[in-house]
Image (spheres, rainbow, N blue to C red):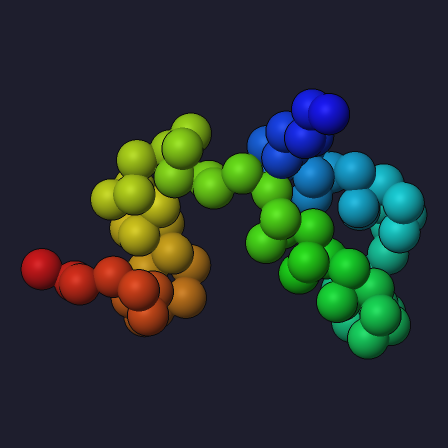
Length: 74
């Protein structure tokens, strides 16, 4: 039996958001939908397989103002 290959993270996110409806606001999601979103992203391929970790860390910092908890910012 062949195990399924995890989807790319962007593809998984698009799949889930399409099911919720593209016009659904994050604040309108139910707790179950938030769990579905988190689970789907966690089960997808790692994003750093497609984008360099340094670039991801930089983007995270620019977006949130803090370094990711798994990074060493030096």
